[in-house]
Image 1 (cartoon, helix red, strand yellow):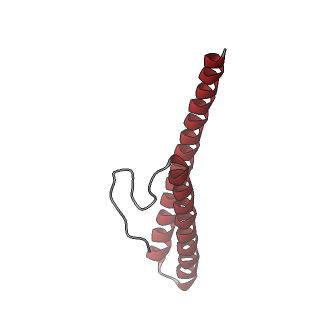
Image 2 (cartoon, rainbow, N blue to C red):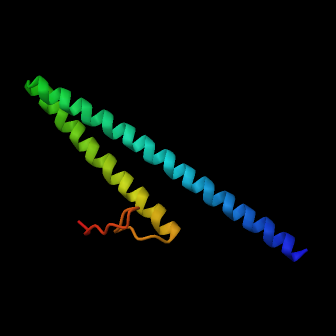
Length: 98
């Protein structure tokens, strides 16, 4: 009976870990999509060259920085929850803290 309970708990644990990874994967893909859209719009506005476009591009650049900071925070929380090191990427490359 105890082994059955242990087995069920382990199954629940693995299921929750998988859901967590899937949620992070979806967040990462959404971040990439938003980031690419912002970069493309900034480039188009910079190419236009007028002052209104430059002002709008500056605002989008701040939004892009905010989006990157938010994603970095989410990534750090995810890695800490997994027991990873937030100063390295998935390839094991160490990044200096800013």
